[in-house]
Image 1 (cartoon, one colour):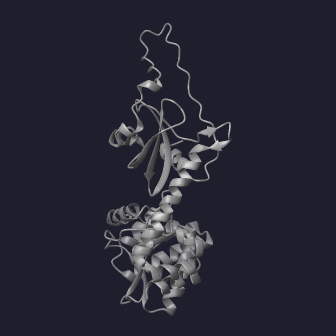
Image 2 (cartoon, helix red, strand yellow; image 1 turned 90 degrees about the horizontal axis):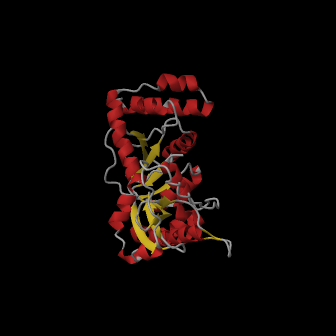
Image 3 (cartoon, helix red, strand yellow; image 1 turned 180 degrees about the vertical axis):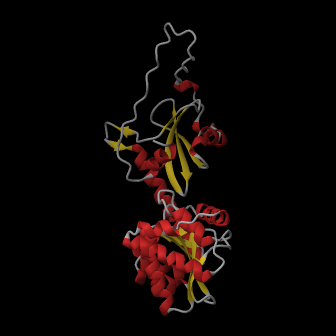
Length: 321
């Protein structure tokens, strides 16, 4: 299992309870030339958690990519630190030994009380993060607009994300609706994604009835869709907006019909398109894209998934006031 997949499993709040076992030291008898086995760390050798450098911990965990070390705390087990990290807007718990040589990812179970201590910590931080996010949304939108949006979304308002729009790509996007519309909604989409194809129909419905709204499609071909990269590059390399729309429409029609032959014909990768799509991908990663489609409103808030047409339009009506 790849490390990133392991980290994603640890981050999920629905993490299955699993006991963490440790390996015994191999006997060094008769192995004079073998690498020395690290000595076990005594509790007395541990610095207090408050004295441990976050930078050193981040360096120790660099194999997991770019992450933020939120807090270093003691754990119930002598010789282990409990480290709260944040990656891609999500929290996770990692356990580190005192010498920062070994990391354990998984659930720590209190056998007596039958409690998943790791899960409890993650829930606590996720709830705090959710509270902070809602306060940020309220500040960004204003209390009146926030409350109106809350009525539309209900508890799903917690699914909203705050994003930075400063690096929106300038080339290769696809516009649907009145080009002069004052309100622009951005969609990060994969031309081979069935959920994106579903949302695409909603986009067409909305621009038909509201000439003051347009959608701008940013392409992010997912690696497990075999034709997506070539189709995205084909679209992005077209100088004509009409031609870009034509290819994307055909692609989504083929996705809906499961027509792999048409998808293969549309998949025409090229150097020009590849360069443009790299900018689209960079933007998607900057807003912590977790999957397609992703809907981004000009206020700098976003929501993932192919939400129903009526719900999407109600959100737009609230936000564009």
